[in-house]
Length: 245
Image 1 (cartoon, rainbow, N blue to C red):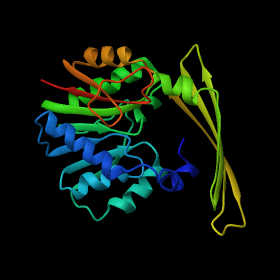
Image 2: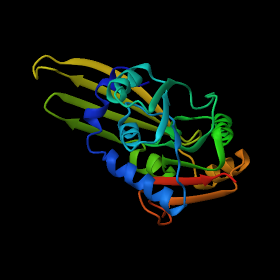
Image 3: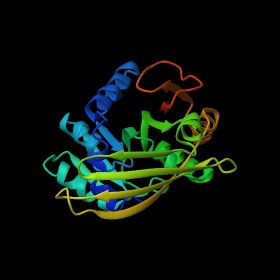
């Protein structure tokens, strides 16, 4: 997972406005009257959001499981003295401190395929939060993984990257398999090929809310995309905000 792809990730995700994503997170802080100092970011990837959090002056600890992703994040974040980078697993991370906020973006939570592992993650987040702390994360919706990505094939052709994205949705396990084939060239002429396989689990809102409550979160709100509107039947990205008493 995220091996060679890690080195193309930022180029392929250049349509994601991480600065705007950070602004939305700050809007959530404001809406919930939170003024966090210490923030934990799970599954930070190449550190694109981490950069804006750290640049703003928050004390940030961020982690990811992929060494390849972390090597890119390190280069991006090494000048920010208020940022600490770790290699940890979302389902069993252990950090000897508590945080005012825990954040995870870009459907990283969908990569947790087992319900019990997801409960462990949520419980771990709860235990790493200070009292009155806030947990913010987003997910690809059940609708998006099943109906939009589903069993479809996507192709993209850029100057130096050509890739196919073939998907298979398992209706029994509610798991979507992504099969990615890349052809990449640094000089525009000589291409190398590599393949990756990714799995995401489709969860329904009620499942996520139930697991958050089981983990100890008493207050949970669910929003559509980057808004404060309730999600609809065809919402593709769902934002969750859970607070700890």
